[in-house]
Every structure is written in C-alpha cells, then in structure tokens.
Length: 235
Image (cartoon, rainbow, N blue to C red):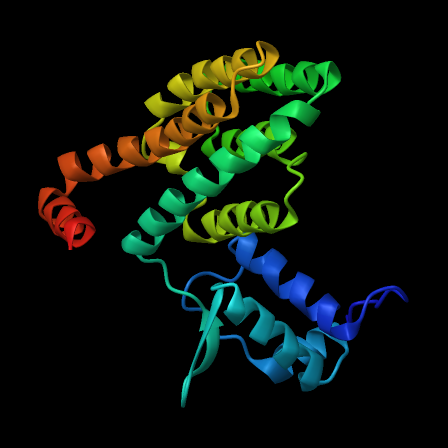
C-alpha cells in the first residue's frame, strides 16, 4: 500500500524520512541496496524525490553511492565509530556548557526522572532501551544550546551513532552503571552554576568514557584489531 503524503510534507521529505527511519531501526542494514523504483512504488512517488532523498542521506554519511552498484546503506567501520564518538564528545560537551544557563529547575527534575528510570533498568538491562533513555536524558541538557550550528552537529552525531551501532551497552553493560552516576554529577554541576569549561570537560569525559570502555572490551577480545586501531589513531 502506497504511503499517504501529508499536505505539509514534500515527496522528497517523505522519502527521506521513510528511508532514514528504516536505517535507524535496522530494517535497512549496512550494505542494503536502495532501489529507487522499488522505494518509489512503496511510497507512491516517482524516482525523482527518492533520488533527492538519497542524496541528502549520502551527504549525512548514512548512504553511499557507487557506479555500477547504486545506492546502499553505508557499511559500519570501527574507525568511523571511533571518529564519530570523538567528534560527538567535543560538540556535545560544548552544547551542554552553552545550554546550562538556560536549563530550568523543571528541566533538571525531568532529567533526574529519566536517570532514575535508567537506574531502575540496570538489573534487567535492555541495551537498546537504555540507549534511548540516554539520548532522552542528554537531549534535556543540550537542546537549549543557543548556537544552531553546534546543535546541528550534535544531532548529526547522535543520528550517525544510531546507524553505526544499536547500543554500545550491549558490549559493555558495566558502563551503564557508571553512566548514570556521571549523569547525576552533570546535573549537580549545572545546579551549582559550575563554569562553562568545567561543565564542558565533564560532559566530554562522560562521552569518551563510553568509548574507552568499548575500546578496552575490543582489546581484551580482539587484541590484534585493537593494536591496529591504536596504530591508526597515532598515524
């Protein structure tokens, strides 16, 4: 059945949202071929808006296009995950620091409620759900960022992370317990009026802590790959 196009949304935007949603929920996995005609038929549109949507997704790094192969969902590369996490730690740290003056007591209360739900889920951890709650928590802290360009980079980083890995906590569940403790520390820093640099560095360390936990896991399970990755980082 063809999708119903809302009057307020263009055909290109419809295709973009439809494809992106299926990449995000892993319906379209890395390497999946995106056939313009088939997608257009599914949505009840021509190949033109589908092509436009795929170009947007290619610009975001979610889709690749190769001659004689066509468009396909971007393949996951561990180095890409590393670079995305490193970048996200920087831009999210800045966004959180810039947001702090605009975060209200109500925002803090809402963030704490989310963190309490995360704490309650630790005994029977669902990594995917925990990651969703993690984004909800951090969104409260960075969405007030007054710089739209930095905020856009944060959004792009989180969207990229959804594609690269469903949840890092699947590999390092112990990191989840450390994470919720660090969440409370971030909230206390905001409440106490900590200076921007202190808050930025704390938020950045929180993000890189997850990356470090995953790298340690990889080193213990795949030592040769970890050495190769470490060499690339120094190159």
